[in-house]
Length: 244
Ligand code: UDP
Ligand code: MN
Image 1 (cartoon, rainbow, N blue to C red):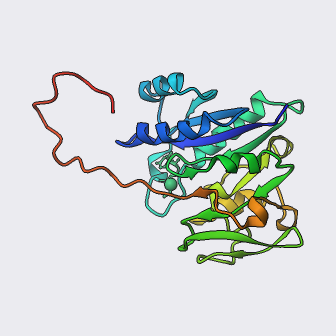
Image 2 (cartoon, rainbow, N blue to C red):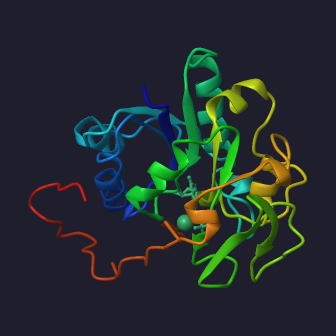
């Protein structure tokens, strides 16, 4: 059987949350052997997300962990605790017998179905280009002789792994074999989460280039505009309560 793709999605309550999750689910439900680990940044599982997941047509696990307020400041890495909660769940609920690939799928990105075909064969850690990051149209690993030899990026090319969260996947057995590997807050500079994590589990020379030797963009770091809600009524609300 194909290895199961475990997509880890941190998500938090805001006006566009359900729209984002809906868009993601439309891609994910077309991917065979797929398991969606949705981790809410909240003190409890919310009704909105629970109801959504129950109806979305994607096999899922619904977790939550609240980010402490002191970590919710500009310039601080986002969703560290949520991604770690998902890694903990995998380590508790999956074993040496399970074949799988783990991928970090933020809720606002755009995913090509081909991306999942590419990552499915990840033996250790695989890597590919990502659109709209690093201050450029795309960022990508430079590949020579089937190995990553450098990075095409507009931002901090000195990063050990100049990739975005959406630019790599990890075999489930690598996650299980490195039980202490996790995303760090302490000592992690902004934009260094990916490098800090990857250096705990792999080396640049061991990375497996995907997407035609990292020459195709199959995922985009899109960001959703905040909807204009200045005309929301303060008192005379609608006659029915409608979930958005
Ligand atoms: N996120 C979260 N809590 C927050 C902010 C973000 O769980 O307080 C999630 C968000 O839903 C997304 C991921 O963390 O899945 C990355 O956040 P965002 O897309 O805002 O980061 P950016 O695209 O700006 O790097
Ligand atoms: Mn984002």
